[in-house]
Image 1: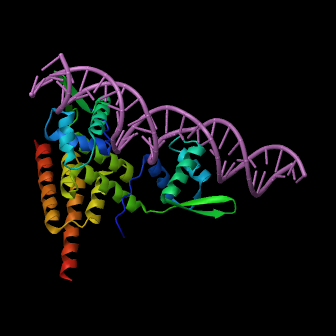
Image 2: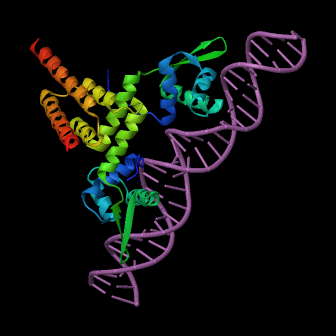
Image 3: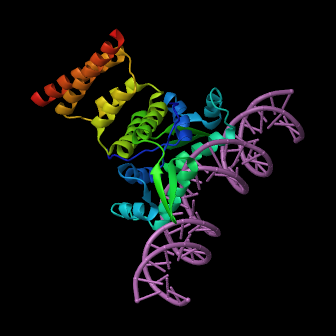
Length: 133
Length: 133
DNA sequence: AAGAATACTTTACAGATGTAAAGATTGCAA
DNA sequence: TTGCAATCTTTACATCTGTAAAGTATTCTT
């Protein structure tokens, strides 16, 4: 799995949000769903989706005269792309300083810090176990 | 200090990289510096910088017929903007899940994990101390 | 079968960004 | 003072993104 860099636009995130939740879906269906938050005209949604197909971000399948869309990348891939983008641009590619920055600048409440501490601990153990194996 | 959202483009990051290091500087000077990495023509650099001035990202001062530029925002502000953007788009605004994702998906080596654990610990203590005060 | 409803396609347009050539100015060296 | 060198200004243009109206095709409904 090569690390293609997925840098999504706002519009693309909006579309993915609904398609990751449930797909395949038709454009009118997606539009209706989006209506709940944004006020996008049908053609806006449709245009965006078709551009995404052209870019390989969505897949389509025909059902009679209906076109159904599904994501061609996972949410994880997109999330990862977004993080990569940030760590590359803003932290010179170094992950730890970025995390450090987040810890220092975001006033996370105690329980969240604690939670993170736990996470790191268990991750460390897991890694060690893996290495030992 | 209000939370303005600074979402910088690639070009803008490139310019800031050199200005944060040392400023004020003239456009030809910045261009020369950038030459080391990217192959930007002078006018590309200058155009980008002037657009940044228009956006309020850079300040200028005249020195005779020279124009000197300096950053109008700090590196921290820019980093923070970048992180905000990611956490908002990709993690629904929730910082902890984002950190969790990073921990889980980036194969940080033991020492870095350890380092982070220390960081969190000290942060927790600092917070507690602050609260107690 | 005709009209209404639904979905799809085409066309558009403005603003942002990357990228830069060409033209105008100004100051210094000969 | 005159021309070259350095710097700035103007203009340009393609691509991407946000946003959507208008036109066309298809399919129910009556």
